[in-house]
Picture 1 (cartoon, one colour):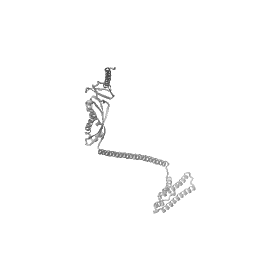
Picture 2 (spheres, one colour):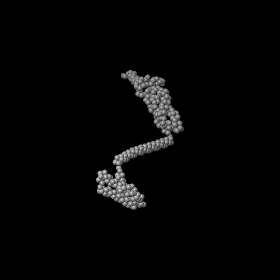
Picture 3 (cartoon, helix red, strand yellow):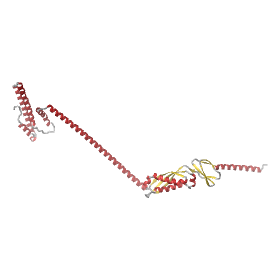
Picture 4 (cartoon, helix red, strand yellow):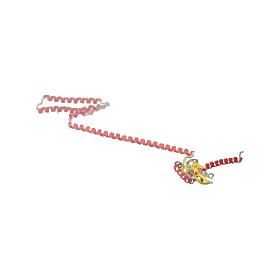
Length: 367
């Protein structure tokens, strides 16, 4: 027969061993705690702070030590909802803020403040209203760096005892009222239009200045060119006159050559096709008489030469007489031409000239 007491004793021993094993497992589970990287754990022993657990494997006293929720030691970014803020010029603007902070002391973050996130939000809102309340709208829109710096200093000082370090505070958006936005857009549009008009006028002014400067330089250069051309032309004419003057004096022309040149120049008076009338000067017959005198002089020179050679002949005298007759004939023909021209001209122009030529004494070497 089976011993009932022995069987019950064996069952009791087995249950006791199982309970003991479970207890050992539970004790080991409560005694060993693994902390992840970038987290910290606060240990309380019998309700009192005992120590802070670092990342890795940690041993605790079972049923005596208790670990509070882990604290994230990484830098955190918290964006707060828009907050209405009144500026110095009594305008309500909506400002969004972003706070960058990091827990540096897990014990202080656990015991010094009940909820550090809510505390940071409320402190940011109140500090933002104090800072922006001393600025007008334009300064608030253009002084973001100044506002960020002031907020960071105030928050860092206030949260230091909470085991927090505020690294940066940024204003994400500053939204003025819609009416103010419309006014600002109109003002900026007017300012841009004014600047555009100013730039356009400045460009037009510079363009006109450059064009005027270019025309002035062109006129100056053209005047300089005309001056140089006139100087060179005058120098050329002076040199030409000087050369002609020197040539005339070197050639030593007599009255016969001058009278011949005068007769060659006289037809050029009526050379123009637009000439309706021309006047025969009184010197025309004088020139013809001069030619006659020249022929007469030549005829007189021939007997002089013959006299020097003592060979005067009757044939030489007749030749001189023929030359004188030819000169007189030429003078008579010139008088006829002058009379015809005078009769063909309206108003009897040139009458005094031809009359002077007719009343001139006849040329001849008979004297």
